[in-house]
Length: 575
Image (cartoon, rainbow, N blue to C red; front, side, top):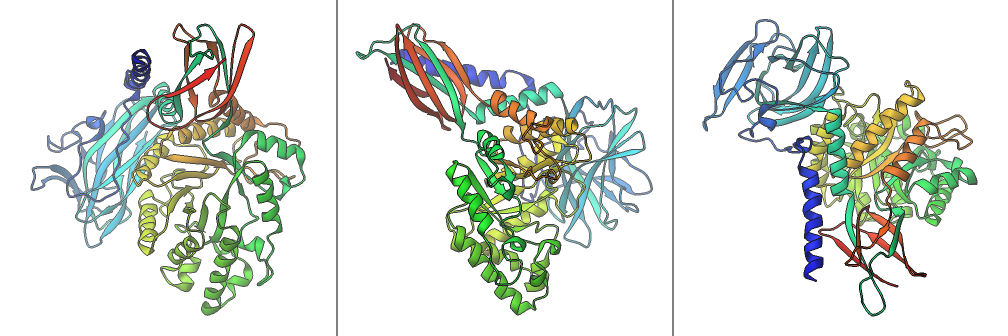
């Protein structure tokens, strides 16, 4: 037993050393969601920036353009920070020239920011100018008056500029911008990929030692061991539509790959009740039955959609009293019918961008939807779901801070098990920004799902596949992400924006990418021989496996699982 304990300790030591022995793994996951009295120290000691904590006055920092004033102030604990006052333009702020930006690097950015003025808060953006003609949005923060908020973001230059500048801006020209503990840290593409692989290895895989003995308990050396994964624990899937019903080629293709689904439209209010009182759940029922029969979990999407374009026309014509009765009936109807049958619910879709129900029923209308749905389905998490949270920092309606604030309001409305749904409708992905936002949301300790992943159809199929792989790898590698669903329901005309196959179930480039990830990169298959101690060890993705052991004409088989937990799993099998 001492030998086994020593072997296990050695394996864990080697595994952890592999994850930390290279400087490429020094990505700092730190993030903060509370407004603080004092800022923390700059990440990476400021990285490539000069004077990131303003201990040397304004050295390295200048006013971007114009007549605003820069000066240094000191807090009562001795902390120094820079202030841009007398701002006349949105971009009047502290700025610093950046040297040797490279299109072959990924840049992570962070800063502590606050505002001073007649308002309680204002949106402040971090931007980068390149060669005076391109301006990159690298992150944003809803900065508060009187305390420090943490901005975390990043960017990837489209080319290597001759000259560039980092600066901050706010559309509210009447506030002073205060900045401290600024950091800009580059990583090569190789370092970024190594970080992803290390996270996947430590967060999505476990170490297993298989011990082989005879019936008398004697260890057996040189026994042939084969381990083959047959299912995965991590929820990964796609949207489906009614087109999958009765379509056996589509069904075979889907269930071979995915363990999770979501109905594209068949559960939405305009689909299930196109005329008031005319309920129609037949397609949703049939699709759920097919998923259940094939071991596929389903997300409940959605109970309400705030966008008036997707609200039944008859609903928009109701007076307020009638509308309240209609929404109450909708919750009872759909949640009551499917309580306990979905793994999570999108309760009120796209609340950051639209506010139909709040405009009609009061500012807390959607929060009451969450509470009512939770009461009918108390064991199922209730998700917010919105777009442009991780896709871009240029949508002022969907900053990560606004998302967090709305989550807090839902929580304060009552006992609700919350979840974070990030639609993930990407154009060209900004991976440093995506990771930074996931870091920040991850501090909340709530389940995070990428719920509608796709890539803009403006790109050709191969480019879509390239960007899709970047998004899936980044999402799968982040420890806070608990599920990924692509928005790729198949129709005769194609898909919403991106298809994995054509209608004859032949893979398109995006489908080839998904297959390579699922069946090669994120699937475990091991063959080998036991050592002199009768053991063989391997790292495997969490999931279910078939184990086969043979020696001298004898064979034993056994089902096994690799599950998430501390330490090393030990499995014993006799021949």
